[in-house]
Length: 631
Image 1 (cartoon, helix red, strand yellow):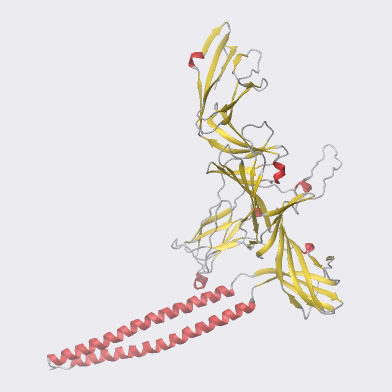
Image 2 (image 1 turned 180 degrees about the vertical axis):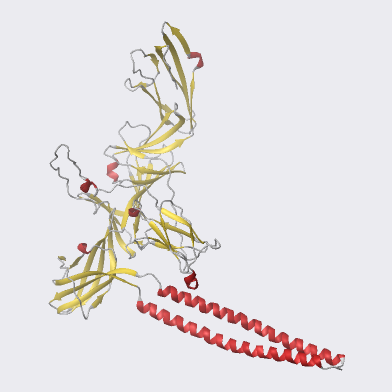
């Protein structure tokens, strides 16, 4: 039977420790945070064993650490600490290799310098001989020509050699500068913070033991995401259930078993209690309410270009970091950067740090999705500039419609039952949450970007209806209705909408406690709608101290689709707030009229290419000295 061991956290200094290699086996990701489970196999000796587990997430919660095993052992003490350092041994080896490389360059520079010095002396000697030859008189023309040709040949050879050697010398000097910059960058490389756990285990025999280490990290989460596709309104709705998972805990999750849970460990799990309230005194429950996190729509991604202020050229390899985190990127060859802001940071005040060796650091508050930066040169550090690479990230665009829940009658086509097209995870219900365990292993790097996992795809019975209010807009809006949607374990999240092969935009499934999920699929221009005033019916007359106005409107609707469509047409009669104003002779044949609100609705079933004409009429009597605005 597996035993969960209670841990006593004590500071200690251990000698003769055995370093334990552990790997991440599975992760349970909550809406805010994650439970990481590591596996390790360690050889224990009889008696006390000092162990150390390194390279853990810097942000793990020490109070959440648990170690379990099937063996009968005792943990005498356990200590957790953060370690801030980079790999000194590896850096020292690299610096040593770079120094050797520089020494080789300097040796070649010395040889070339000596050769150039000899060529200089040879050049000076030739010039002196030219003057001696030129001072002698009485030389025959043939002899003088021979001397000039000889000098030209020799001096040309010397100059060409000098030119070639100077090119090599400049290249070597550039190599020395570049290598020095790489070495400077290595020495100045940012320090990495990790966690490590040291523990002493008492065991009664010598053998290998399997240990399971688990802990909670907060820099992780997931959110549901859907693709909703309607081929046409004579077909059921196809729903692809997905999850966007992110983490920046400092450790990559490579090929791990992943479980997604909609539980929120950060949320207050205790029911609130009423306090005695004395009239005139504050009755605040702010402390409790602050534990309930509300989602906000914030900046999810920031990008821009980093340039040099002196010449406006792009800076390649500038570091861009979200301050207070380990998340960052570097600019590419065009000075461009793109950085995702994790969902749990989007509601906070984030600042970006821009740095590059040879330039003055800048910090910028993230108040827009595009932030361009012009960096000033640092004269004291101009020789320390080095290119380190670049990276780019995908951007997701958000638009459009909104889905909501509501009660209402069912119309149009309804598929007989839901059909499961593919199932990529196992679902289970906890007392207060849902869990989705992926069937295949999944990887999530520690970079704060969202990685999408497909969970399942369903073909769901849906009912469709069109709604139009031509008084406001001569357009029909399609709505899909899903009844008893709770059986599909849907959670609030974003949804990409597709209708008849066209992407309509992004919606938000706002789930409430109603029995019907209404999804707005946007406009459909294949239903032609027009509303006009009936001029022949319009009358205005005065009788005594009153005016009597008669109005009539005609609404024409036409279905140009190749299949039938249900359309609800809505309009309204005016209502009177005063006794001196009377609305009467209201007429809307075939419509349902709500007397309390004045709203009118026609429920039409339009065959392919069918047209209908609807009319509404009413008369209003009011004092003739009263100003009336009619629309």
